[in-house]
Image (tube, helix red, strand yellow):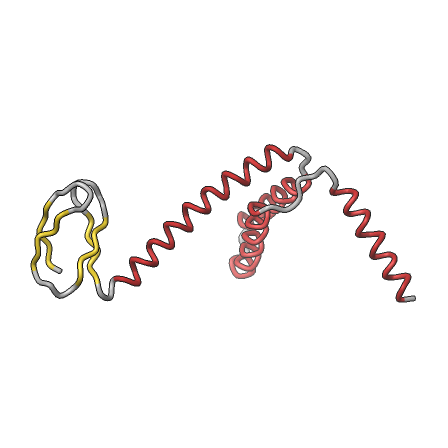
Length: 142
């Protein structure tokens, strides 16, 4: 009896593999969309909004469409664009987290000319700061 169920599972898995042959499958964008839909479902348990329900359905349908698509080149380009945007956002978050960690010991000033961020130790009084990028000088309290 157990062996029959195991054999059914193997056959089912093989059918799924044959069905997915030549299709795009799961990538980072599809995973992100699916996780976002799950978060919206949890949020909608409290909101009970029809608009959020429609958004959930549309995002889930788009994610499934991407996974089952046979246009692999186009889906790969979409995923590459997503990963590029995700990388920029992750880099920005890392930099901001680093700046927040340094705020205890340093002041972070922005050059008025070139917008370069300059780190100055706290507790030095009023000092003249020279931007290392454009050599603009300005006075700030540290």
